[in-house]
Image 1 (cartoon, rainbow, N blue to C red):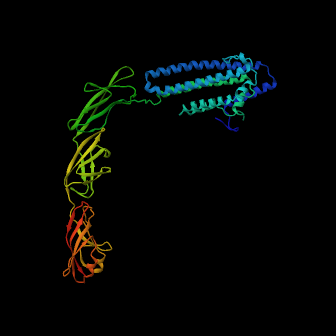
Image 2: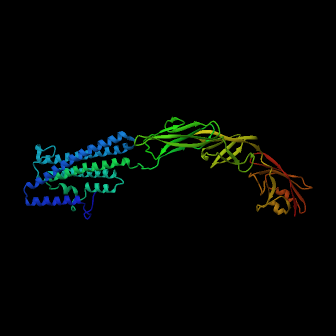
Length: 503
């Protein structure tokens, strides 16, 4: 963590800054070496604190391991996090220990104490700066401290006070406007630098203990404290199709999920708390039993339970939305549902017809044969497809439409008084009219135009023969007969005649 010169300083930063000023003044006044003995005394005291913290941490980890053996399901996750904190703390601690030795080694040469406790060149002002600034090790130490601090903060999510504490204890912000590395190591006596580093080691062990204790406390954080216990039956479904299985989970509510009670049904103990029975007949069925749970005082307490389920015959609801028959050549719309089964778990099949699933229980069924078709419905229950019923439908050809004349404006008529000009833009069509019950498109393929005294004109298509119309005069009768139309089922239909009086 870094900060600008005008950022408020933490107490730790002010302490280090004051230490830096005191040391600078000591050097300026050429204070005797006895003053440096004070740093040695502080360092010795820090080592005593470290030893106490390590003993405390050892006991804490032992307790954590013991809890995990009793209840690994509850404790395991938090113990794993604690072990990671332990590993990272040890690595950081021993890195600083080696860091101290390397500084002392520059000051005392071959006489350097590997434990970094005895320092001959305590007043050496160059060793710490040489190792930390010139050789770049201070930058590495700073980065490691920041990473360690971030680890502590990340594992303290939900506890802002601890997060702020770790941010403060392991801050690497500038001190009195001077970069942290220079403030701690530049022109600083070896004795003072070693003491500051020992302080970080002490902080590591203390923070480790704080965080591991916090993680240990989280093993009970999600537990509920209740004042009521009762038996609970949770069936997969209360409505069962004959031939399928009824399945129910029997549990003791408001109980620690890591403790398993004994469950008895009809005097027999159930394994895994699951009751299953094959349902061979329809009807309503009841069952009861008890759950036996040992209390904290060792007394076994029974908790009664009872439930029921309904077994029904396989059934399906099939509804032809438009008619009670199906027609060839058009879309016959159906609604299909199965009680107790979601629409997405329902499937429809048909012999002699094609089916298109439109979603939400809607289907389009098109017969591909005459006579009859059978529609069958299936439901998927507990991953298994079961027949739910069906029905047989008669297949009919489309009803015969009616022939109409349609002028250029789209107006339909069945003949009557018409002018020759109107007839020139008129076509012959076939439909069920405005009150149609079935939607189907027909196409007129041929018809015959008849007028007394003239040879009949056979026409292919829908438009009247213009040459034949040119030979007609007012007052004569025109008959449109032999009208043939083809429907979407592919069959030709012979329609009635149309009589027109020319005006």
